[in-house]
Length: 407
Image 1 (cartoon, rainbow, N blue to C red):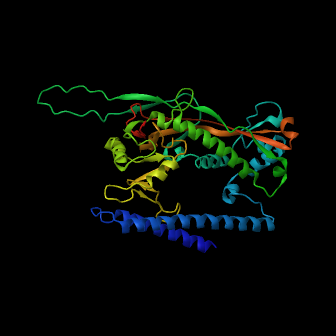
Image 2: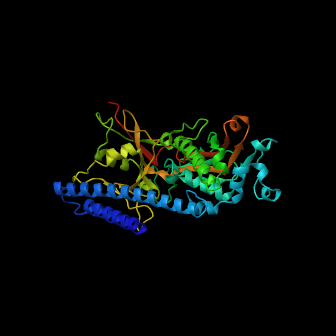
Image 3: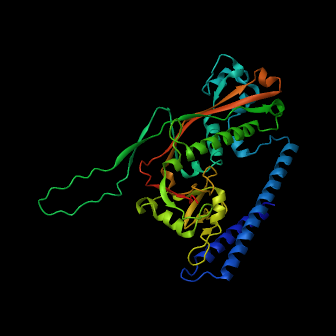
């Protein structure tokens, strides 16, 4: 079966390259009905191949899981990740604070919030914390596009910013004093805020079943919740008592003409791209960001030659892998960006990695076994994480948005 999956991936990559060649060939030629039919056929086949890969991977995963159970091997969603995690974390999850020996407690930082063991805390170890952050990247898009870094403390931080694209030097005569022109320096704050996963309840049966990778189960739930809430604030946060989102920090690049309430035209995308100064537009980390519903609209657009402007990417992880592109730029899907509607800021373009996400230390996981959970046969887990984000731009020069028409 693995050979079949590999063959499908190779077929996917070959089709994606064929589509790219069709779109790129003969730049001066007119896109005709034959080109369009070929493009649509290839795109349809790509979608079918992707669906078949997903089906075969699901079946393969079930085969591995069943074989592992038959052999008495621990079953988990991510065997490699599970192997990297410390067994102490799983031991603590299943048995609580009392399950760890004094020697084991010295290997982790004990963050007990009270003197009651059942309400104790646990500072996630490096391997587990890294896996948690990695899983959080799956929910949103901001952590993929932004620049992410960690600090040991969460004290307020000011980051210098500068936009000097409007200034130039000068040509002066001999023995003439040079003119003063200060750069447009500024600062943006990178404060941190506390995010909660809300309490995740796990049945006691799962904790007692040695064949269940309880770490993977709980980490997936905690990561999904933290990832989603952080992505929302990193996207649309107001900046007042919460992170300033990238949409909030961006400036207007293009407003759709009357009638473009749920659509965008090719010319508007070109205008949006060129609304960003070339000094930023040609820098690393530049791309488009939008909701998947907006991408659906864009996939149907064509340039002035009649060619589709969307080019599918190669399969992730395959040799020569590449992302899907729009006007030659990578596309980041972010479901927290507004879908196309009246006055909606639905598409971002610019130097997306100029958005900084700051994580403070590691996440903390708490385990609850008080009567509220015990009478239901459950154990509660809660994760806290401190993080912040801001666009390092006070003028909105590096990232611009497309706004749909009001009517």
